[in-house]
Image (tube, rainbow over all chains, first blue to last red):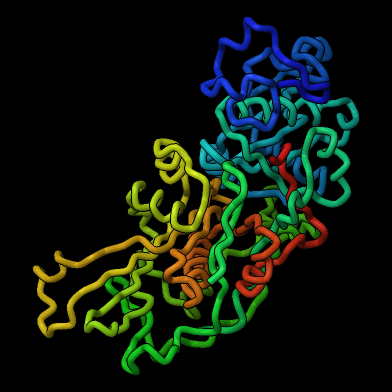
Length: 192
Length: 261
């Protein structure tokens, strides 16, 4: 699956892998059984590492107080770290960037879901000091790839209006087919 | 009856019931009772107090305002306060399983519609139900895994029993129990829950069952202290969920999908 690039047919050797449905052999990002090509990211792992950014996929080594600071820095509420711990334990996939020099998280994203059909991405944050370096994109591209590799093809998220432009180039479409994201805001007024 | 099947094989959100005003219908006997408790949790019928109509602190609002509760120590909790304590006064704890509707049918049988959030569901029954509402088939193993990985699975079952006097154990076992509705929610067990796959058997649509299903599921989630309950609604059912207390694009926040089909 190519991110941010043209869709091309994979070389014959790669077609033998992965796909259970031969009809889906032509690489299309929206097919459930996609080609396991080596993923192409906007910035490579090596590139990130050379700049001192380490990619992490588990909560190990993640200081939740530091994570909270990043949340607060971008305007999210500070949360109870015990609850964050619970949330991370029940998270389908997560990705964070550790800045080698300070050993602190500077970018983060996680996804919840049912593990087979649907996933929702939450809490996408980049420390303001480290924004515009491509870290947000790096985290998102890899998180999507990790979810796709699990076979999850319905990946959704809720985007604040000012960052719609961040998600669109990554492949996200708002309100496709008129589907609307909705949030529960009050108990119903009419009691039965 | 309005069938709103999902158009893609991925689990895009869909609901199959247009709500009607209430359960009271001409065909029901006058001695029907709602919310009969079948479990250990008692429900106070007559003493149900008026719910305090407080706007639950909106998750998105809390993001924007970042309001602070304590200012003494450094670790400040800014989450919206849990409503569990308040709910104890205004709302009884929802039992896992209870009867929503009980009615006598024309042939003399008694039908009970039972709501359960216990998640006991036969995946074959579910597939039959999905077929009935016209959803494309999904592999059974994946269906089972999705259910297992869901934080809460709410079901509606119809139980038929003969209307003879003695409701003894043997007759209970001879009951016909049929899955007629389901809704499930995924969650991180702490902050967010998302509702998926709301469906009601077409034969039972138009009776307010879909509404009850979602309403009870939401209530069960709130009572577990999940602060943010979200879903994705097909355009035809946005009104349905609005009537249940959901708001589309709150504060301009948009639902987005990755390369939807």
